[in-house]
Amino acid sequence: MDGNRYLDLVGSWGPLILGHRPPAVIEAIRAQLERGWTFGAPTEGEVRLASVVSDRMPAIEMLRLVNSGTEAAMSAIRLARAVTGRRKLIKFAGGYHGHADSLLVDAGSGVATLGIPGTPGITPAAAEDTLVVRFNAISDVESAMERWPKQVAAVIVEPVAGNMGVVAPAPRFLEELRRLTRDDGSLLIFDEVITGFRVARGGAQELYRIAPDLTCLGKVLGGGLPIGAYGGRREIMGQVAPAGPVYQAGTLSGNPLAVAAGLATLEALDDLVYRQLEAVGGRVAAALASAAAAAGVPLTVNRVGSMLTAFFTSGTVTDYASAKQADTAQFAAWFRRLVAQGVLFPPSQFEAAFLSTAHDDDALGFLESALQESFTTVPAERR
Image (tube, rainbow, N blue to C red; front, side):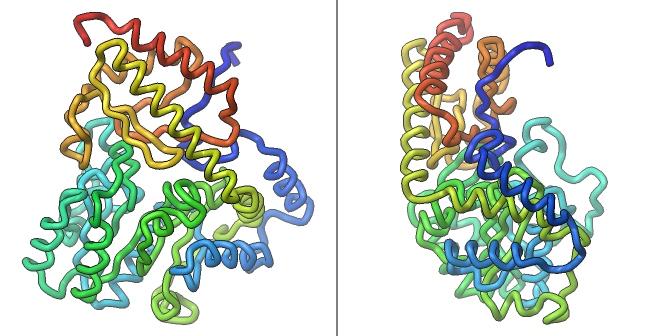
C-alpha cells in the first residue's frame, strides 16, 4: 500500500513453501469454491489428503483434521492422557505447541519474543502437570521420568525446534526419546506443525528415521489456509470419538478449501523440490555467515533444510538457554536495516526464516547483496 516491495523470508511463518499465490494452489481453491466451501460432513478431499499424509508419514495410520496447530497439539495430549491413564506431560523449554493453557509454560515463539511470562490467566492446576526440561538434554527427561515413575502420559517435542529459533536435535537425542518413552509406557508426540513436509517429504520423522506414536501437523499441510491435524497408530486414534470415548470435534474441521490447497501443495512437493529447497537454504545460510564474518559480527546460523535462524551470538545454540544468549537489540537493529533494503526477515530473534521455491537466482542475488550491506552498516561499537 505504501509503494514498497519486499523479499519475503517469513512465508506466513512456514506454510508458503511454494511462495505466494502459486498457480496450482489458486486453481485448486477456485475449483473447490465452485463446489462449496463447507458442508459439516466428511468430503472426498479429506480422505485423499489423509491418504497422502499416511503415504508420506507411515507412522500416521489414522488422521483427524482440525483447524489449527494449537487444536492438533491439545487434542493429541488429551488423547495421550486418555490412552495411558496418566496426567503428566513433558515438554521442552522454548518449545511452542500452541496457546492451550498447559502448553504455554516456558514457551517459545511470541512468548519468548515479547519476554512475557508463559502463564498469566492460566490456573496453577492447568500448569502443574506440565514438566519442563531442556531441549537436547536427554538426562533431564530421564530424571523427570525417575521422579514421576509411570506417571508421564507423553513427551511432546518439536523434532527440530522452530520457536526458540531453529535448533536441530543433537545426535541420538530423538532416538533416546523414542527409547525412554517406549520403556516408560508413555507416548512420543512429534509436533511437526512447522517441520511437517517442510524439512523433508515425510517431515522430520523421515529425516531422522524416528516413528512417533502421535504427530501434530499444520502450516504446509494447508498450503497457507487454516488447517491442522493429529494422527498416529490405529489403536491410539481409534479411541477418538465417534469410534472411541475421547471426544473432539469441530464445525469447520477439514474445511474443503484448506484441504484443496493442501493437496495441491503436497502434490507439487517431490524429491526434486526438496533438493532445490536444500540448496536454497544452504546458499542463504552461507551468505549470512560470510557477510557477518566479513564485518566482524558474531553470528551463529542454525539451519535445517529451508528453515534457518541467524543468532547474534558467537556461541553454539543448542537449547533455549543458549538461544537467549543472543543479542536481541543487535538483531532488532539488523532487522530494521534489512527492511529498509527491501528484505522482510522474521521480526524476532527467536523465530525461523522460511525459504520457498519462489526464491530463485534473482531473489537470492538480491538477498545476498542486502545481507552484505546490512552487516557492513553495523556501528563499530556494536561489533
